[in-house]
Image (cartoon, rainbow, N blue to C red; front, side):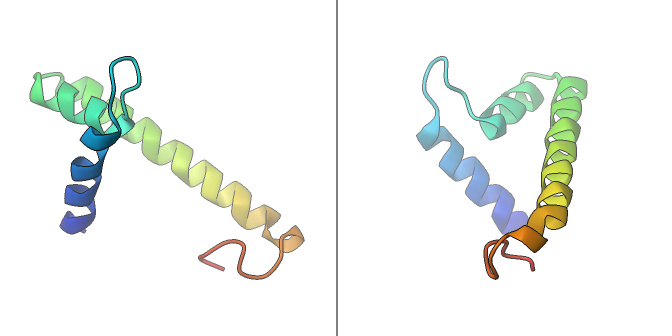
Amino acid sequence: MMSVTRTEITVSPLLWSPGNETIGTTIFNYEDGGYTTLAAAMSAVTVMVTIVLMVGLDRFARRLPDGAIPWR
């Protein structure tokens, strides 16, 4: 699991540009700047949105062709 986090942190700076920050670099910068509560809140919102999207896709999967959703 740690390697996934390292990969995310490694790729995010490559995608970053002024005015176009990635979620990963924003959370990292909040944590690094001492805003741990804000970093935790942003992380929690990101996880919740991901869960909602996955549940929505899972329920919609019946109408999609086989293999369209990787975990099904």
